[in-house]
Image (cartoon, rainbow, N blue to C red; front, side, top):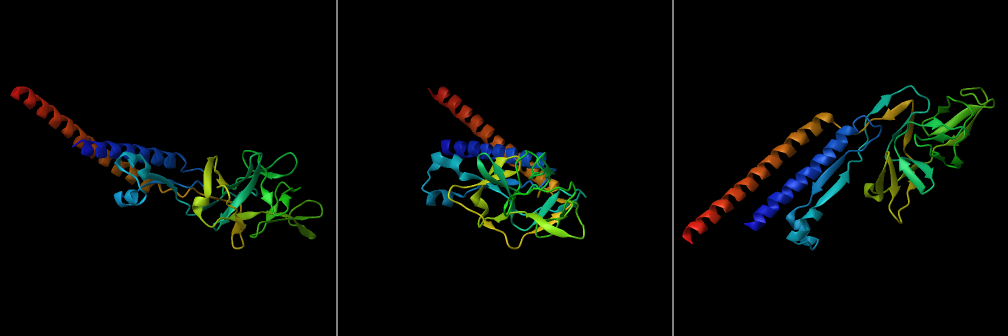
Length: 248
């Protein structure tokens, strides 16, 4: 019977972990390019194959990031960008390169394209430095200016191009916060050949609020059912102890 109690208590802990992820998803429903997280619970067979025992059930939970692309929204801002494809923008940080799909950029005092935290967005040849406050960017991610630094002039040329990076597996990346990810040790991305840039647009979070609400209700009902089983077990044990007392 202790095994039954352990299973119900572990299930309640799993539900609490699932609720934590659902709450995080809903809190970031308006965050550009946010990728929802889900809890995956491995089956007993998976645990046996991995060599785990009953005392290691906490390891049966895995947090998985849903990397499906979100829809696009038009902002009309010349320094807002959305990526159509599986690629990422590369940012330069003191800790090394990081990656993001949040394309709400701006220009710093040096004219570099930077993200909201001030990290430079990498181009194929280093920092992207533009002279126009409203640059024109084509679908390949090239920044185009005329000789006077104004966009759309007659004599035009590329002053930089986004470095778009792809990874073979979604698990190659680790979330670090603020919409940024780092590559796992020993993993290197490749420059994307097929991704396209949409200027004046941002990618929405890939979160369906209605779906998340359904998950909340299902998780709460499951938690309550496990709670009732635990209470029933406790009452049964109490009754058994009282009967043992009467016998003695």
